[in-house]
Image (cartoon, rainbow, N blue to C red; front, top):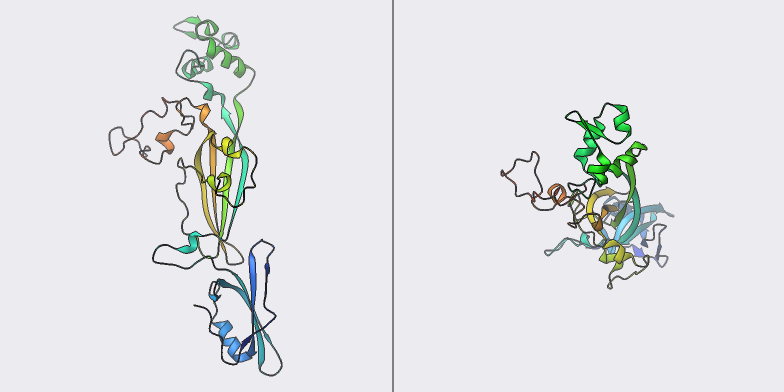
Amino acid sequence: MAITVPNGCYRQPTESEGVADSGDATFSYVLKGGYTDLKTLADGLNQGDEVVTGWLAKNWELQRGNGNTGTLSITCIPDAGKESDAQDANNAPIKTVWKIHAVRNDVSVMAYCAPTDSAPQRAIVEKWLRETDSAIATAGNFRENGAVVDVAEQYPATALLIAKMLKGVESVIRFYPVITRTRTYAQPPPDCLENIGLVDDPPTSEITGDNTIDKKHPKGLAAKLALYEWLKMQDDCDETADGKWTRIESWWGMLIADNPAGHPWDPDFYGKTNRWPMPYIVGQNNNGNNNGNNNGGNA
């Protein structure tokens, strides 16, 4: 309900609307009348109170005039909605900002290994790493049962990886795309800490879909984002200095093509359903996929 104007107080023609530095719309509501009445009204105000339909109180200032008169100026922000029986209208943010960037991740060269003859095999690399004879190890080989194993002959794919490691290479650089959505609310957000650490598709249609109002985004963005499987890494909620609230969500993507099964984020570790509990006890209180690592999950 809008505020009640005290008797003898009147709205002024100096009221104005504008846009703050943040880009948010503002409205200045001005009352003039008896100082005592305006002081009582100001003392009863709270941030977020409805001043007039569509506008909520953000901050205010009361100035004393001649005699017992005064002027109350209330700076207002748009009303993002009040509670209803159907839902909390705070689901409608005042502003949404999207950001896309990449983060660096150094991946162990062991990630190139797989349990197949056509790929480097970690078990063979581990045997080479344990070799104590420097001449044999420098040649990329190891001893087993007293005999020197010629890795290049028996395990050619593994020999290629060992050759890289002999040059001092222990990791390779990878860059993961990160999508961040920051939403601003007049009241506390309806949710936070949702699906953290789980495979979760970001609502990219909000920035790339046909129904978006502002279609300013890099060309071909939708096609690029579809190449990745996403893990939700952040869902924070903060109150800002001006009394608003922000909810910041981030998703990290890994290339689906990097995993033959199409799940670079191992579903046993990060799946929304049936992910392994800790501790993981086979056959007890879990319905895990049990095939995550066999399917080549990378993380």
